[in-house]
Amino acid sequence: MPVARRGEVGLFYTDTGSGPAVLLHTGGAGDGRMWEQAGYVAALDGQRVLNLDHRGHGRSDKPLGAAAYHLDEHIADVVAILDDAGVERAAIVGYSFGTRVALGVAARHADRVRAVAGLGTLLPRDFDPALRLDDAAEIRSRGTAAVIDEMAAAEDEPPPAWLLENLRGTDTEVFAGLIEGLSDDSAGEWGDLDRVRCPVLIAWGEKEQAVEPTEQVVVLPGLSHLQVFYRADLTIPLITDFLARP
Image 1 (cartoon, rainbow, N blue to C red):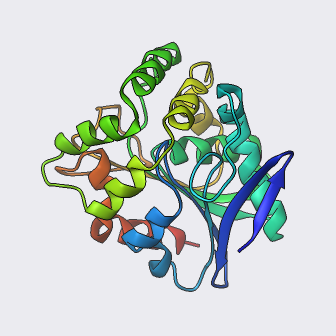
Image 2: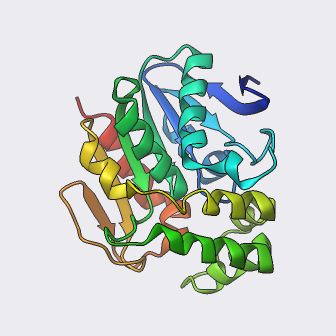
């Protein structure tokens, strides 16, 4: 399996299929196996799928220190994957934090991104990114598994065991460092979204944090944050139809 290198960090990804390139990027916890287990990779038949374990996750290297998990590092990692795979332009499909990364890449490297499809709500425009420091401290205090279990308990239905196992396996310091790395995200999701010129589709659950709707947003009735990912029967048709548009 290919491994791209940025400095001392090896970035593992799979490269399957042929056709227009699509890069998959998951959230603050979990790795690329989530996309396989939920059925997204198989559903993207007829496209070349680059499925990334982002830094600190899965089979990629785990650098030390919160600075290694700054948003800019993740954005540069995506470009490095595209370079390593010899891909000039790709669609990026992201979940949760992966959507934030996708918007960042599209805003700052417009020539490399043909479309962005995101799963999971954006934060309100007036969100103070400094509050992320409190979130990071809580993750460090409680551990990844406890935080994920609390999220799962808040869902209307038990999330699948494979998803919880994958999310819980994220190193606590990596998870906290990633969240801490967003604490100075001055542009924010909406700031980058306003700069993106490629087609964008964002699907979020009705029970996620409410934010203003836009013409680029699909709200999925009754769903919360984890469901937006694992209810692939609802989200895969949205993504495949979106990516098939001329």
